[in-house]
Length: 311
Image 1 (cartoon, one colour):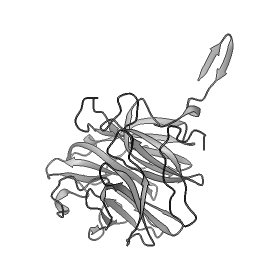
Image 2 (cartoon, rainbow, N blue to C red; image 1 turned 90 degrees about the vertical axis):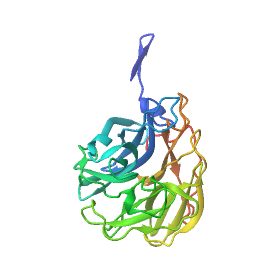
Image 3 (cartoon, rainbow, N blue to C red; image 1 turned 180 degrees about the horizontal axis):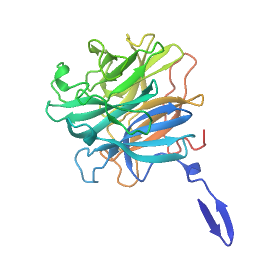
């Protein structure tokens, strides 16, 4: 951006002044970040509710990318509920992961013919798509999980690929679950397993550092983010406590944890946007994340500064 004053022209980088929330021209929620080819790709939900709405209005998912976590390129909506012919609406939390040069986008949508929410998966040859329904049907439907009476227990999918190449899918509301995936990434490989976590609500996310597995999730309601650790991806999981407190002006929270250029980052959403932000009009933010010597994570402090220096 160039600005001229009294004949003196100066150039500014708009991203150099980036702060939380990351985007103020659009409402974003449920962040899922992925690092690929020295670039962070950020996939988010898209809150379209009006200021007086009483529930979520979400029809598609947005994509952003950055090479320094300060300057972000907007790629717009790269996947929509309409891309899943068997779905009826509600583009809720999703997650993208790469395997064998293909990119798999696991999504939450409401099923058109089976009561409740379901998990679908789209695939592309690029992190920016084009993405298409990989199955033509849901991967997980509400009738597969009958241990709750609610119809929104199959939401918030998060994929993880272990060092041996085995892929897993984690998901759930009120009851956390996981299942192994086949090599094709679009079929389950074995039974669905339950996970024992205190005060679990939703928003599972798995990452690994050194030899330790970290399982973070939305804890209680209104939601804080807590986490547990294990020596095995299949548990058992040791509860480590609350990682960050309630999000501003939003009873929900949803985290994404990545390592980029040797540093760790915690990405989340709040309702703190000054332009009518709130429960159904959320905004994604980012903070540096640090580990203690014993491998536990230092509490995340939510700030307006975020990551203000290019990484």
